[in-house]
Image (spheres, rainbow, N blue to C red):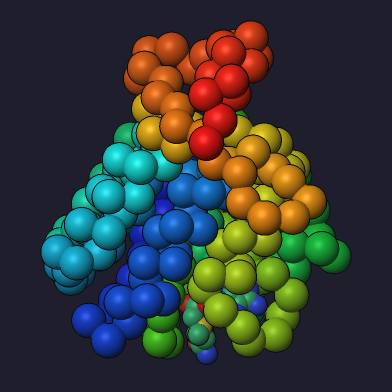
Length: 199
Ligand SMILES: C[S@@+](CC[C@H](N)C(=O)[O-])C[C@H]1O[C@@H](n2cnc3c(N)ncnc32)[C@H](O)[C@@H]1O
């Protein structure tokens, strides 16, 4: 199951929030972000630099109208999940189980300001999911949704073609130079060897 995130309603003044949506999508297991209906080269550059340093794969695309993207996603067999405080509660319903049972690629729709009412309709969203039925943020909603979807396994993931890797430590910062070829995810043994080059 591959997951992409469609961010609707980006405005240049939302730069920090949108870039955090992208960072969160990547770190929590999504394969890419689509910035619909607007273009922002600064966001594109930020995501590309992030992937160059910390690995991927993670794609960024922009400018496509949300409605045509959603239509073609669904017509090619993908499922859409709209994150909204008004949806089925992720904790008190079985919505995550039903989403997983589709075994289809997912497009997760997140808003910024109020989304067009069509987002809630059957023509757009297969599932309307609430991360609690209180208003908060697209970044928080996305993180919790992806974590529930992947059951935490995304937090163990190693990224391909990364130039750096963090070694978890109780205090301070430990970072090692590391590059894993795109077609070679590396083994634990490889990692041990690379750790010897610790800086
Ligand atoms: C700042 S909120 C906008 C809230 C706005 N009042 C609305 O009508 O949805 C921006 C985005 O965060 C996400 N969001 C906020 N609270 C959420 C929640 N409790 N569950 C799921 N998504 C949420 C939705 O994707 C929403 O479009």
